[in-house]
Every structure is written in structure tokens, then in C-alpha cells.
Length: 81
Image (tube, rainbow, N blue to C red):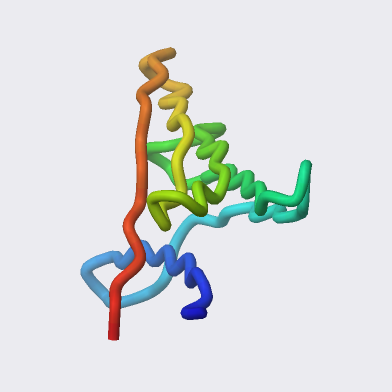
């Protein structure tokens, strides 16, 4: 099994990493649950709430864009290497 890797980087013109995030993960009902909160200048308080869908091998859930107060259904696929 290939593990999930969540990699978030934000770069300024001078190539410095900016912003921050909180990532929490755990098991609920045997499925991996992931919560990510972004705290960058353009995304303060925006969140991803995701769960592992073993049948489709995807992370599925919702992205809440806090500034616009909108929520979107999202999914992430695993890169096969």
C-alpha cells in the first residue's frame, strides 16, 4: 500500500515558505479521517475535512473557503509510482 502524503507549500517571490497549517488525522469506524486547517494570508481558517474511500482509493470530503464562506465537495487521488 502506498501511503498518503499531504504536502502544502506556499512560496513568496524570495522563496520563503509562508503561512501555516494544522493537520489532524485519525481513525473513525476503521477509515482514515483527515482535517487540515489553512492559516495563510489568503486562506485564513479555510479547512479540508477528508476521509479515505477504500473502494475508490481516494481521499474525499469537503473544502470550506472561509473568506468566501463557501463549501465545495473535493477528492484527491493517489499518485501511483
